[in-house]
Amino acid sequence: MPRTALANVAVDHRLTIHEMGPVIERLIDEAVEASPRAPHDIEVEASVAETGYSDEHLTAELGKLTVLSCPECSGPLWERAAGNTIRYRCRVGHAYGGQSFLSAQDETIESSLWAAVRLFEQRANVLNTLAQKDRQAERSRMMERHETLAKEARRHADMLRSVLVGSESDPAA
Image: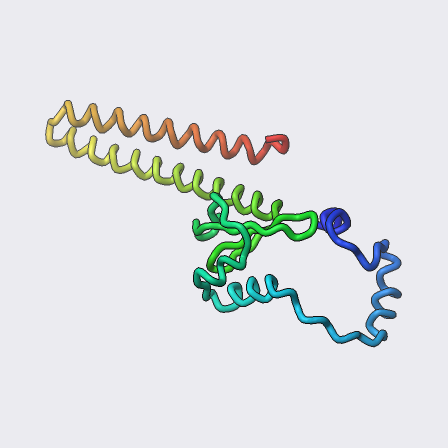
Protein backbone atom coordinates (compact mmCIF):
# COMPACT_ATOMS: atom_id res chain seq x y z
CA MET A 1 0.00 0.00 0.00
CA PRO A 2 2.74 2.60 0.76
CA ARG A 3 4.34 2.02 -2.67
CA THR A 4 0.97 2.40 -4.37
CA ALA A 5 0.37 5.68 -2.54
CA LEU A 6 3.82 6.98 -3.46
CA ALA A 7 3.27 6.04 -7.09
CA ASN A 8 -0.21 7.48 -7.45
CA VAL A 9 -0.80 10.47 -5.18
CA ALA A 10 1.07 13.49 -3.87
CA VAL A 11 2.24 12.60 -0.37
CA ASP A 12 2.73 15.12 2.41
CA HIS A 13 5.46 13.21 4.23
CA ARG A 14 7.75 10.28 3.57
CA LEU A 15 9.26 9.26 6.88
CA THR A 16 11.09 6.47 8.63
CA ILE A 17 9.38 4.97 11.64
CA HIS A 18 11.74 6.91 13.95
CA GLU A 19 10.81 10.22 12.31
CA MET A 20 7.04 9.64 12.57
CA GLY A 21 6.54 10.44 16.27
CA PRO A 22 7.85 14.02 16.25
CA VAL A 23 6.12 14.83 12.95
CA ILE A 24 2.78 13.45 14.18
CA GLU A 25 3.16 15.44 17.41
CA ARG A 26 3.85 18.64 15.41
CA LEU A 27 0.89 17.98 13.08
CA ILE A 28 -1.47 17.46 16.02
CA ASP A 29 -0.59 20.93 17.32
CA GLU A 30 -1.04 22.68 13.95
CA ALA A 31 -4.22 24.54 13.14
CA VAL A 32 -6.33 22.77 10.55
CA GLU A 33 -7.77 24.61 7.58
CA ALA A 34 -11.41 24.09 6.71
CA SER A 35 -11.72 21.18 4.33
CA PRO A 36 -13.03 21.98 0.88
CA ARG A 37 -16.20 20.24 -0.16
CA ALA A 38 -15.61 16.75 -1.51
CA PRO A 39 -15.81 16.39 -5.29
CA HIS A 40 -19.30 15.54 -6.55
CA ASP A 41 -18.28 12.05 -7.79
CA ILE A 42 -16.94 11.20 -4.33
CA GLU A 43 -20.16 12.46 -2.72
CA VAL A 44 -22.20 10.24 -5.07
CA GLU A 45 -20.03 7.20 -4.31
CA ALA A 46 -20.20 7.88 -0.57
CA SER A 47 -23.99 8.23 -0.72
CA VAL A 48 -24.37 4.91 -2.55
CA ALA A 49 -21.97 3.20 -0.12
CA GLU A 50 -23.65 4.62 2.99
CA THR A 51 -27.29 4.15 2.01
CA GLY A 52 -27.17 1.30 -0.49
CA TYR A 53 -29.56 3.37 -2.60
CA SER A 54 -28.92 4.03 -6.25
CA ASP A 55 -30.93 4.58 -9.38
CA GLU A 56 -30.10 4.97 -13.06
CA HIS A 57 -29.28 8.67 -12.60
CA LEU A 58 -26.84 8.06 -9.75
CA THR A 59 -25.16 5.07 -11.38
CA ALA A 60 -24.68 7.07 -14.58
CA GLU A 61 -22.51 9.39 -12.47
CA LEU A 62 -20.33 6.52 -11.26
CA GLY A 63 -18.40 6.37 -14.53
CA LYS A 64 -18.38 4.13 -17.58
CA LEU A 65 -20.33 0.87 -17.34
CA THR A 66 -18.00 -2.11 -17.91
CA VAL A 67 -18.50 -5.76 -18.80
CA LEU A 68 -17.02 -6.67 -15.39
CA SER A 69 -19.06 -7.90 -12.46
CA CYS A 70 -18.64 -7.22 -8.77
CA PRO A 71 -16.77 -10.03 -6.98
CA GLU A 72 -19.03 -9.60 -3.92
CA CYS A 73 -22.54 -9.28 -5.37
CA SER A 74 -22.08 -10.11 -9.08
CA GLY A 75 -23.67 -6.81 -10.06
CA PRO A 76 -22.35 -4.62 -12.88
CA LEU A 77 -19.27 -2.45 -12.28
CA TRP A 78 -18.66 1.12 -13.32
CA GLU A 79 -15.12 2.29 -14.04
CA ARG A 80 -13.78 5.72 -13.24
CA ALA A 81 -10.26 7.03 -13.75
CA ALA A 82 -8.84 8.80 -10.71
CA GLY A 83 -5.49 10.34 -11.54
CA ASN A 84 -3.15 7.50 -12.41
CA THR A 85 -5.47 4.86 -11.01
CA ILE A 86 -8.73 3.21 -11.94
CA ARG A 87 -11.61 2.70 -9.52
CA TYR A 88 -14.53 0.32 -9.84
CA ARG A 89 -17.87 0.57 -8.06
CA CYS A 90 -21.04 -1.47 -8.25
CA ARG A 91 -24.60 -0.26 -7.87
CA VAL A 92 -24.85 -1.29 -4.21
CA GLY A 93 -21.61 0.43 -3.19
CA HIS A 94 -18.81 -2.14 -3.28
CA ALA A 95 -15.70 -0.27 -4.43
CA TYR A 96 -12.27 -1.36 -5.61
CA GLY A 97 -8.99 -0.04 -6.91
CA GLY A 98 -7.32 -2.15 -9.58
CA GLN A 99 -5.31 -4.30 -7.15
CA SER A 100 -8.12 -4.70 -4.63
CA PHE A 101 -10.44 -5.77 -7.48
CA LEU A 102 -7.96 -8.48 -8.51
CA SER A 103 -7.57 -9.59 -4.87
CA ALA A 104 -11.36 -9.81 -4.45
CA GLN A 105 -11.57 -11.85 -7.65
CA ASP A 106 -8.87 -14.20 -6.31
CA GLU A 107 -10.85 -14.71 -3.09
CA THR A 108 -14.07 -15.35 -5.03
CA ILE A 109 -12.36 -17.84 -7.34
CA GLU A 110 -10.80 -19.73 -4.43
CA SER A 111 -14.06 -19.76 -2.48
CA SER A 112 -15.93 -21.06 -5.54
CA LEU A 113 -13.40 -23.80 -6.14
CA TRP A 114 -13.56 -24.96 -2.50
CA ALA A 115 -17.37 -24.96 -2.78
CA ALA A 116 -16.99 -27.18 -5.88
CA VAL A 117 -14.72 -29.55 -3.93
CA ARG A 118 -17.34 -29.84 -1.18
CA LEU A 119 -20.15 -30.41 -3.72
CA PHE A 120 -18.20 -33.15 -5.52
CA GLU A 121 -17.51 -34.84 -2.17
CA GLN A 122 -21.17 -34.61 -1.17
CA ARG A 123 -22.16 -36.00 -4.57
CA ALA A 124 -19.78 -38.93 -4.09
CA ASN A 125 -21.24 -39.60 -0.63
CA VAL A 126 -24.83 -39.61 -1.91
CA LEU A 127 -23.89 -41.83 -4.87
CA ASN A 128 -22.12 -44.30 -2.54
CA THR A 129 -25.22 -44.39 -0.33
CA LEU A 130 -27.38 -45.07 -3.39
CA ALA A 131 -24.95 -47.81 -4.50
CA GLN A 132 -25.27 -49.48 -1.07
CA LYS A 133 -29.06 -49.41 -1.34
CA ASP A 134 -28.80 -50.81 -4.87
CA ARG A 135 -26.56 -53.63 -3.58
CA GLN A 136 -29.10 -54.48 -0.86
CA ALA A 137 -31.91 -54.44 -3.42
CA GLU A 138 -29.81 -56.53 -5.85
CA ARG A 139 -29.89 -53.86 -8.59
CA SER A 140 -26.41 -54.57 -9.94
CA ARG A 141 -26.56 -52.28 -13.00
CA MET A 142 -27.71 -49.30 -10.91
CA MET A 143 -25.13 -50.13 -8.23
CA GLU A 144 -22.33 -50.15 -10.82
CA ARG A 145 -23.55 -46.90 -12.33
CA HIS A 146 -23.72 -45.15 -8.94
CA GLU A 147 -20.28 -46.48 -7.96
CA THR A 148 -18.80 -45.24 -11.25
CA LEU A 149 -20.33 -41.79 -10.79
CA ALA A 150 -19.12 -41.69 -7.16
CA LYS A 151 -15.54 -42.46 -8.23
CA GLU A 152 -15.76 -39.78 -10.90
CA ALA A 153 -17.00 -37.21 -8.35
CA ARG A 154 -14.17 -38.13 -5.95
CA ARG A 155 -11.65 -37.82 -8.79
CA HIS A 156 -12.95 -34.32 -9.60
CA ALA A 157 -12.82 -33.30 -5.92
CA ASP A 158 -9.27 -34.63 -5.59
CA MET A 159 -8.16 -32.86 -8.76
CA LEU A 160 -9.56 -29.51 -7.62
CA ARG A 161 -8.14 -29.97 -4.12
CA SER A 162 -4.66 -30.66 -5.55
CA VAL A 163 -4.89 -27.50 -7.69
CA LEU A 164 -5.95 -25.43 -4.66
CA VAL A 165 -3.46 -26.88 -2.22
CA GLY A 166 -0.70 -26.76 -4.82
CA SER A 167 -1.37 -23.09 -5.59
CA GLU A 168 -1.50 -22.18 -1.88
CA SER A 169 1.93 -23.68 -1.24
CA ASP A 170 3.50 -22.32 -4.45
CA PRO A 171 4.12 -18.56 -4.16
CA ALA A 172 4.87 -18.34 -7.89
CA ALA A 173 1.46 -19.78 -8.77
